[in-house]
Length: 292
Image (tube, rainbow, N blue to C red; front, top):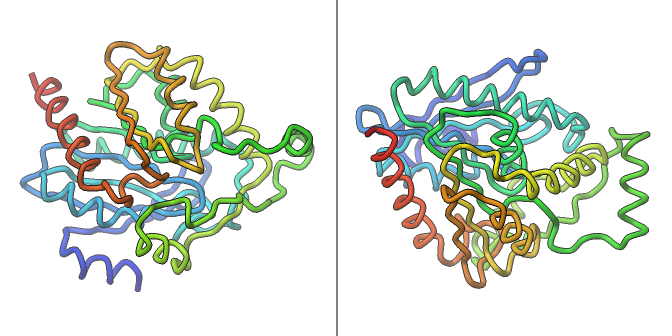
């Protein structure tokens, strides 16, 4: 029912898939296709506790600009089966990102591709790009999780990291507050009322995201594709300062855009139109360069 409502509301060439991951897991995926007008595609990796359908409005704006969107729901997220938050194997998620790229190349042959990660998705996309030499036209990170804005007290943090080694499957609350997503009250209400959103996180995934955030900050120079990083200075979920530190080791192919006062979900925040225009400016510039 959710998907049919989205298709009706945005009137897009919207297609749903069931993908089989490398380990046999069934993943829910979907595509918003710009059709004959498509000149590039974004491969979107969503954040912790949410799902790909929350980007339908963003996808509709991209489709209007000739940019198609392909995405999927993490294990235990959205419409992909699994116990909410119980992901203890970070590398399976990296394999799922690799599958997204493979499917993107099949779906959008001879088009320029961009890998886009938000929040935890940004952590995964950054680490994937560090580990792999890609032929993508560009990488986009919004509000990436390299560090949390409010790091737990040392004792609590060390306890969680210790337990994660012996009981990685144990699920705890993420502590994410809907009010920290956006300054738009309507968006906060939509977040609270979305039945597919959860606030669960396994100890194993927390530890790996914590560790890989540090790895990403040290190793950004290994990313061989043009990179755009955008972060709001008032993000109360993931650390804006960590993103600024992250790009300090970047190549001259990297663009960092800070949004003064911006909250965690820049695509749903007060200045989302300006964020979209900045995104399109970079996409247009890179598409021209990649096609040259």
